[in-house]
Image (cartoon, rainbow, N blue to C red; front, side, top):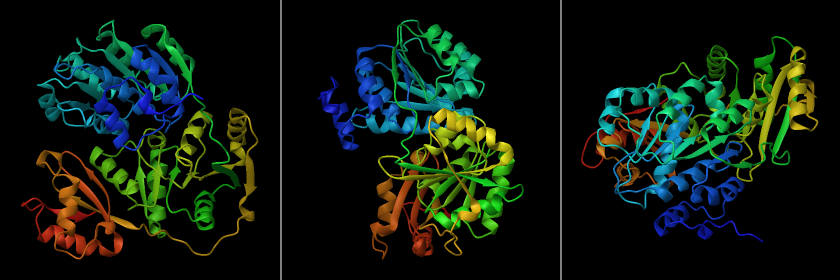
Length: 460
């Protein structure tokens, strides 16, 4: 039997130590199939579903060959969204923490240019970003890639869907010919094959299952009548009573309106869509990930690439016309061996979409009527945590331990009442148990963190 332990890989001891410190033991299928080739320097064309571990695969490959003493940009990772770029940067940082002096910079649209220009004055070893902003820096020569050895296209199909085809090719034209190119795509449209043929040299083709195990994800479709979509959604929430979940809509306006209506009905719901400012998106994702928000009402910006673990349920308020998008939506639940729940609403006029999903999955779908639902009485969600926003972050050298110390030192709060902590450049967020949020706010407002006062407020 072939072992899939990371210790069998020909990588440096400090990198292996970082991998093990993150509690990674055995490689996932995509890692086991791709890492040997990546470490050998081969180009790679890989298909794998969201949550398969592909980020760690290319991150390990990048860090393995990095020349830390060479202060030039040696690796570039292109991502479709700001959220995914931030997540990829954080994953690389976690794996790189045992290797001193590695500089990683994130360059995304929707963020101020000033800090990015300042960061690029001393070239980073690794750049992660979105195609439009990366191209802008290349064209103004604030980013130089003459020393690039590794190019990664992450979620390449999503970048094509978002219209980045030309930006990607123009970016690649500004990179050295002699480099390793790793192309990861959750789906495999013909355009992906054409791009691979254009930019890659004899790539290893790796395919990992894109369907979800129906023994892990319980998927049910409910037929509804016109005008009862929101009522049907509330009935599903009352019947299944998930601790948290993502509700998918196809349109931004629908997303915002539904979140507002659910909030009026006593649910703790927040909307995530492309019209939000980056700070608002960060706040919403922080609250959902740290269990301060029960329902995330989202467009497909949330379907892939977001670091949201242990998600009990996904509900399709509106079915996607693309069966591949549907698969990625429901793939947010049922991860890491946990059972997941995927519920979908459709009208008779949308039956063709349901048939397309059934054909794509190669297995019959469970279709039920709402009248068969046995409700379990009135139900509104009360998230166990609340989020405090602190007006300091990485730029102020704030660390998670500093915040925990300020909350628990000489106070009646305990570490068990403190949840996830997220630190950004200028802001930090800490989740605390909802019953003690007023006490925690008072501690941070009246006290100090590392000898300094910071403004603190509770997010709704």
